[in-house]
Length: 255
Image (cartoon, rainbow, N blue to C red):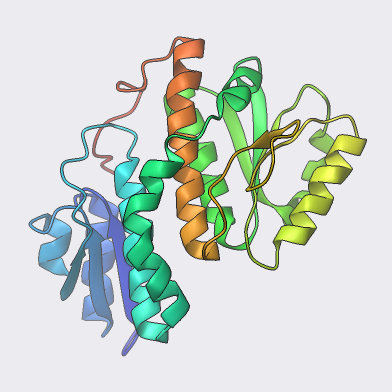
C-alpha cells in the first residue's frame, strides 16, 4: 500500500478491527488518517494524521451528530484536495442549514412508516450514502427492517418488492441524477406504491419538504438531518427507546 492514502473512519476511535487495519496499512507503506470524534482515541494514536470532527460527546448509542460531522469533514477534505470552490463555499454556509432542516415537517412520513413491517430507502449520487444511513438508523432505533438501494440498482431486481404495503423513502439528489429519480418516483406511483420523496418544492402527496437547493453534497447532509428529526417521532409512535436500542453497545468490539 506504499504511497496510498488510507482514511480510517470511526466516531469512537476504539474499534479493534479498524485499529488493526490502520496499523497494517501503515506498516505496508500507506499514509494513514484517522477521522474520529476523539482526538485522544487509540485510532488517533496509531494513525499518522488525525482529522478530528469536533462534534462533542456522542451520547446516543446510534450515532447521529457524528455522522453529520464526519460527512461534513470528508466534504471539507474533498473540497480542499480538489480545489472545489463551489463546494468550499457551500460548506461555509452549511453550519446553519442542518438546524433549519431539523425544523421541517416529516410527520407524514412517520405516520406512513409506523404501519410498515419493512421498507426501502433509495438515493442516487450524493444521497445514496444518506439512504444507507437512514436504513441503518431505522433498524437501530425503530426495529424496522429497511434496505437501501441506489435508484439505478433498485430497478434490477429489488423492484419486484414494490407494492402498496411496502413503503419507499426516497432521498432526492439536487444534481444531474434528480431527473432519473423523479422518473422512478412516477413509475412507483404507477405501480400502486406511494413513495415518500424528500425534495424541495411545493407540498404534494408523498413529498417530504427539503431545504432550497444549494450544492448537491451539502444538500444531502441536510436531508439526513431532517430524517433524524423524523425518526424521533417514528420511535415514539412505535414505542421503541431511541436512546437505548436493543442489543446495541456504544462501542462495538469486533475480532
